Amino acid sequence: MNIPYATVKYMHERLRPELDKAYNDVLNKDWFINGEQCRQFEIEWADYCSTSYCVGCGNGLDAIVAVLKGFGIGQGDEVILPANTFIATALAVNYAGATPVLCDALPDSFNIDPTQIEKLITSKTKAIIAVQLYGQASDMEELSVLSKKYNLKLIEDAAQAHGALYNNKKVGSLADAATFSFYPGKNLGALGDGGAVVTNDAKLASYIREYVNYGSSVRYHHNQKGANSRLDELQAAFLRVKLRFLDEWNFERNQIADFYLKNINNHLIKLPKVIENRNHVWHVFAIQTMYRKELQTFLDMNGIQTLVHYPIPIHLQQAYKDAGYKQGDFPVSEKLSESELSIPLFIGMTQQQIEKVVTTVNRFEL
Image (cartoon, rainbow, N blue to C red):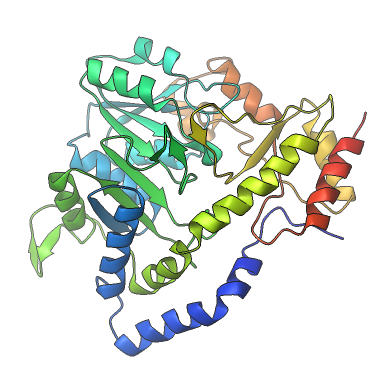
């Protein structure tokens, strides 16, 4: 029995009739951009996230760029973000014209370490981006205190945390604005690229709606040098179908993760930690081991596929060589990059598959 790291096949098989209907509805409507499906999804996603506004975008990276530009952040400004995250978060800061300033991570939650932020704040700092990594929220209370103290914008990069909770509040509603990716493998994924911004700031939402539509709110009238980054009707229609099942799917993810947490027992492996007052939605189940290569090979030989998030931290990427960082600048992030291994967790996993992962991981030895 071979077990993939992840697949969306089973969830799509369950929804095939509804997805087919959504496709045909869009096709028959003969309207593919900025139509009824996108507007309805925006209403539904804003409501789900407990925010007033949602604006669909082409992808999660563009969503962050749009938020930064909407807050007037650009050339000469600095934005603090975690060193332990996917590179898109940093790229968005650069694309907005600002400079990403990296901060180390916490070893248990993998998220940004609030205690390391204050020393990074300068007169150029304009925002903090909290990445809700792997499906669990950052320390948002601490980050909120810091952002208010220094008059900084607080932004959630919630691309991996659809439906997660912090103090019983939805991720997406915990900052000045939040961005989401609907890449197919996300907890709420489209059948292509897609993204969104949610916020309670009417002015920001209006700016972003215009920005992602070539800087135009009236056809052929362009108020700013905008972008072409719109959530298309087909992806919005698919997302509307899948949104109705998101809580059910997150519950299923939690059931799998709970089984792992209770049954994986190997002294060579450190399990992820669920932080108090948070509801993890397990986009990734990230274990740690100093013997990652050996474990990954062992699991592969036993038909279990795994993935590494992320083998090279941002500050050591060739793309950020000009930033002046060096090995040793972010020891926790570097250790995570050397020890993290993501094991299978996806909708439709059978109990037999889950148990095979557990027994195989437990059998690993040097």
